Length: 240
Ligand SMILES: [Zn+2]
Ligand SMILES: [Zn+2]
Image (cartoon, rainbow, N blue to C red; front, top):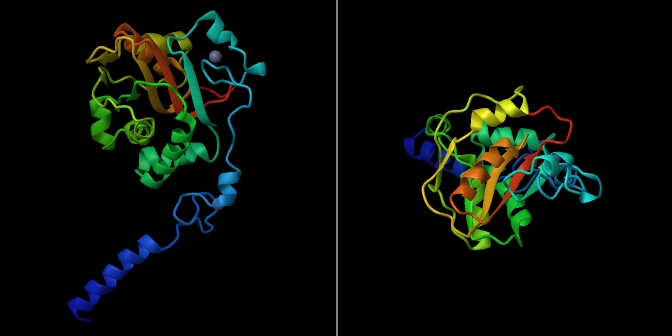
């Protein structure tokens, strides 16, 4: 076969791959241009109907939960698109660890809907330590935060906060230990005087990371810190 024909065929294969409908991430049915088919989108787990307004954990009557009452976190409100359960957990992993950006775009579109109506002056993505950023190649939270900031028409402050230390995996640690590990880990590079900051993150487990980040933002003058996250671990799940 001539080189020209091979080149043409390869070209068509590439174009075809772009035009061909995707297989659904969960059931492999035709999913059109998105990662899940309409039926699997319909079956996605829903966040609790009644959740703590501060930390988004399920809470009867949407009352502030016991933990937030006894030790109020430094963030003011949390909105979670999903509970951290199948297949959201798998979608987040595919995005984060296999760089499947289509799943990231799908999850980001849910965050855009969740964030609409939130009063914010700027958006901050949960920072990654430079070493982790180098090994992963991208900060998943920035990719999630970009369309959110765009939809709210406020700036996404990419370098306003950084993570100063590499924190060892927190799974299995007691809450106090997690807090100790994270103390002072976020460093702000600008003032946030009087600003309402919207933080975007992928997964919220114990909330200690968000608490520490909110603490740094408030120490830099932020008036209010709200968070939108893709997934929140349900009440009795072991933190990871
Ligand atoms: Zn499906
Ligand atoms: Zn709470």
